[in-house]
Image (cartoon, rainbow, N blue to C red; front, side, top):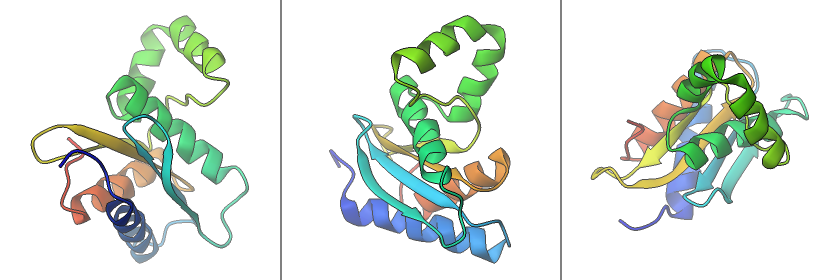
Length: 141
C-alpha cells in the first residue's frame, strides 16, 4: 500500500463516529489527513461546535507533520514550550499539540496520514481515532 484511499479515510471516520456514539460522547468532528497533511475526508456531527473541525485538523496536522501521535507532542511541548509556540506560529496556527490525533500507518509501518478528532476529552478523541484506524485494517502504532 502506497497511499491512503478515500474509501479507507471514510471508513476510519465512519468507524470512529460510530464508536463515539456507542460510548455516549459529545458530538464530534473527525478529520483524516494524507501523508502530506492535506485533508482527505472530514465529518462534523450535528451539534458539534464550529471549532471542532479546526481543532481536529490541528491535532492531525501536528501528528503527521512530526510523525507521532498528538499526545506525544503535548508531552514534548511541556519540556520545550518556546519551540512548540514557534511551530504553531510558523504553521499559521494549524499545529495543535494536544491529545486527540494518531498516525495512520500501513501494516508494514509506512505513515499514510493521520486522523484527529475533537468534541470529547483528549482521551476520548484519541480513542475513537485509534478505533477508526484499526477498523480500517491499518495501524495507529
